[in-house]
Image 1 (cartoon, rainbow, N blue to C red):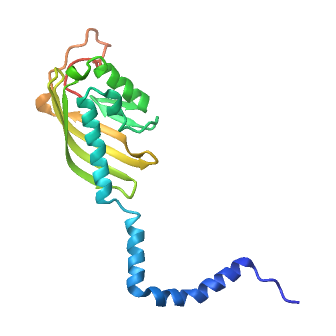
Image 2: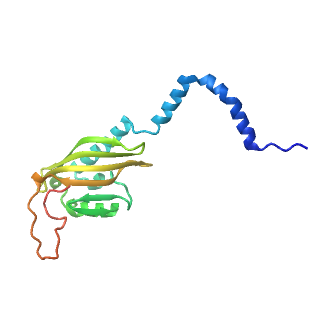
Image 3: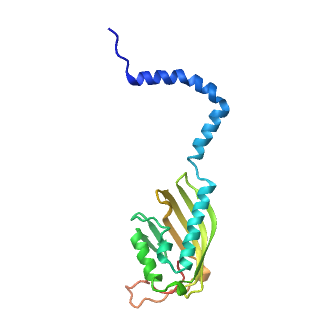
Length: 196
């Protein structure tokens, strides 16, 4: 009595018989092309860079139209978002949004000023992540200033979004710190010192 063949062995046997045919059909150029397609699908491309630059252009345009909610759309809608600015670390989209609303929400388009980004470097970290180094400049407002930022972008089903934002102010644009009213009170985010 013969033993029934296992389905996995039959498939493996067929694959072994087809392998020489595939090698013949594809040859070295075909294998290199297939390998190139696999690598391209796993790496950061110029199209990815342009998409991230587009997110930042849209973000600045929203700011310049007084659209704070549009500006915030660039951030990951998650409690994992990290936002560092003005010496404070904030975690989560809700905290970042609350900070922007407190600092700029009442100002409106005419007093939020004009925001410009200069992208210095975009470095891919695999297919779905990148680090962006750049400069920001805020003019036409009492909170005018300039500085640098480092953003970590990640691609998900929504597209590219900021998952980590570290923004700082240039030394030349910093105003002197105001003395707190009491020794236990710290500076709030509602003052007019430059900070994005």
